[in-house]
Image (cartoon, rainbow, N blue to C red; front, side, top):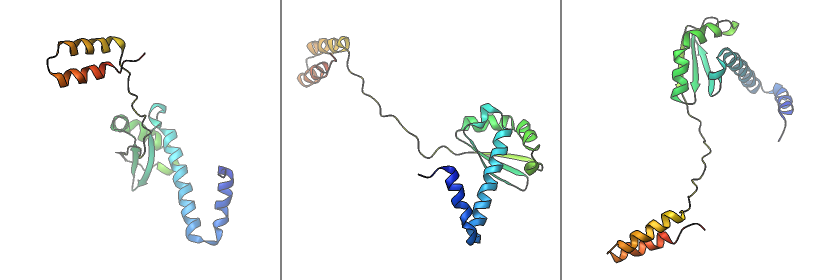
Length: 148
């Protein structure tokens, strides 16, 4: 995989295709705008927030969850005042926050807990008191799964 510096150099070679170079320029402008917005946010709110757009004085951000979005909305006047200090966002008058959870979440597989000796003893004891033969067999089988 190429390093970021090498990737930037390959983007410089798109000069022959005006549509592609225009797209790269817009992507760079968006990246710079996002850096400015995130630097204007309070540190505790900056993680999990992305800059989406700023059109006609409306700044649109996305947050990873509803809690973070509510915190941003609660402090929107402070955030907009801080963002307006940047030349690019001096005419921002409205802040809109959308909730966009991450697409892929790494989930850990649930680990099965082994049966303790005490619980196995209780199951075996209950099996001894049970009159139903099928239930007794199931309880005894469960009791046999105790950890060593």
